[in-house]
Length: 601
View (tube, rainbow, N blue to C red):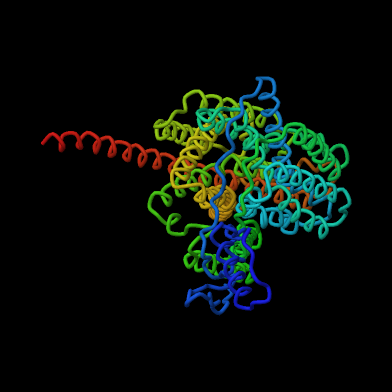
């Protein structure tokens, strides 16, 4: 061991400087993975004669680029072969988590009218329950990618499910709309990790070569379970006592998921310090930007886009925050999001395809339910339809797993879009007398198309991101979140707005022909008013009731024509997408044939 003379000041200074140099040489930089809190070395040294002179100390600011590159996200944990029964248990855990998450997302959306009655609120007020849920949910998964890498997957899973249980338990104590909106906001926060956990559990069952071809289609089945199951079981839950049984069921399912997560831990990669100060700052701007955009898209058509001034201010705030994210990330050496990669033609094309399909899928997620609601039908009159949708979703996922292989993605997408176009065209022929029985085939085709399309697109995106490196997974998560969460809201907003505009157009056309001087109109009013002949003896009152009923029927017919117009537009857009995709495939094939000929020449 080296000794030094403590009585000699020069010897002491040399020893301290040497320790600092040795500390830097041995890689003692625990904070190198957190660029936000990095500092410069305390002193640099220069040898002058036999003395080492310390240089002036200079601290690094949190927003400055670190001297050492941050650690990359850890690679996925190595595959651990499991007994088939254990693998089946992991798959069942994934399904349970997906159903728990899906019900939390869809039960309120599927029963907005009933919830309005529960809180004695208008539809415009109740829709804030959806907006409050989506505001944090659309962006939080991005930050959770780094959180679970830094603190461990097992701790992340256990804490996430506990928080989910606590937040859903709070709903049992909400008795007014204000507290319910607050509870829904925290429910959106707590539910963000659940979809990720469902995906990780289903992928845990398969070896690496099967994760994308079989695991991803199974994951897409799980994603599609929530909406039809929510509409199947909600009538029975509401009959038990309104709002409270819905959340009693969610808490019960979450407790089952908690037991499964503790019993069946995920294989966790090593912990890596990847979360930095500027990551949090950038995420906060992103969360505000996506959150305000989600609120605008959720409530815009209810308050109408150009009528409520505060919608414009929220949209301005969203644009400013997202611009701030771009400015921050473009000036970081190790960004949270690679903006340049996100704006590359390949990623823009990929995002455009996902966004387009998510908008087209709005027909099934909100179009059909909205049409039947206008026709006066409730969920308990549509149970068979949603059971068929559920079965078709599962069948489509199984078919996708059977045929999905690298290189087949474009062909599968062509089939999915063709099914979408056929189903939407069949639905466009609806009338005010159309009932669920007439939509069994068309909605089954659309459900199969959804399962066929998303799995190949997501698998292809994962592979492309992994080729660039694990850190690009964060950017890919943003693409997927934007196209699915924000894309779903965009689709609902566009769909609902077009229906309202077309309904006004058709109402004007119908009403101008309803003149009392028309004998057929007068006869129809007399027939409708005759239904009140046993309770109303005054012929004037009976005629007024007949006019009111005729106006109601005219409105229903106008809405039916409006929904038919929008369904036809979806069919045309799907057919156009098929044409573009086929032309792209033909162009690539033509280029492949030309390259050998050019090489031979």
